Image 1: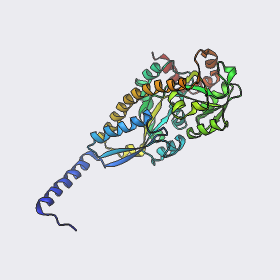
Image 2: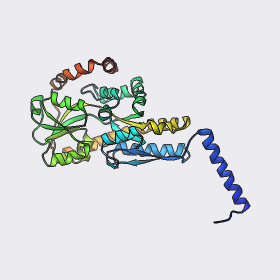
Image 3: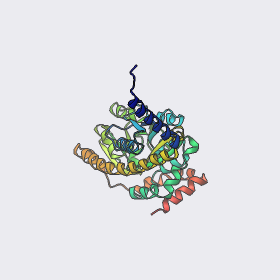
Image 4: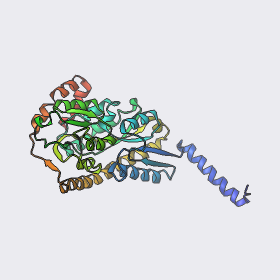
Length: 331
């Protein structure tokens, strides 16, 4: 064992006391937080999580760090949500349609043809409604930190161009593991197939499914465009992504650290939007250059009218009906 001289002992004692005072005054314990994201390493949400981690490390003086597990390293989205709820994963970026199985308000944000445009969605999420929704997570084992964009989801397939609702009839279309998304696809006359995100490429390549629905970056970065050459701009949902922290991890933070986490999350949201816009444009150009048929001139009205039963069902819940009405009134 090395023997410290008097000066070294004094310095060590000062540092030790300072650390004790930091813990005593802030109630904080240094730790590494595990964050899950099913997207690839260079995807905007993964970059945003790393940006958030850098902000937290800086603001906390290095006491807290975030280790990001991308590319489904901790499991598919449905699995990671359950692990986050149990406290085994600290932070999770997920689509609202999947976490809607746990948090009812999320199902409203995933409703088809709810948002008129990306700008409308952002105005809703950046305002009082967005704050109220994020604050509604705690009873379900999560704390909502911020929203990320995920563009508009549209339908693509490898069988034929879809220009009308009739063209969807009989097509096997992959949807997220969400009853709402299955209801939507059945209402359009297609056969919904609930598959984890990581199995879609294999399903397309082996013709187990005819197509899927997602945004431009997901369509291209996953190579789905190589097996599904018809992309129809239905833009049926503009459901955002949401970043949550497990209630267990949140309760381990001091009040000051909670402020650091919330502010870092909000800044990461703005950072993500900039990255997202760039990737969306690049992805659309790549699909066009690869010869993907892009159907833009569709009559959206029949698609929207097909959702009548879904909205009627949602309307039976007074809270959901009121939230839908408030969202529609936002300019």
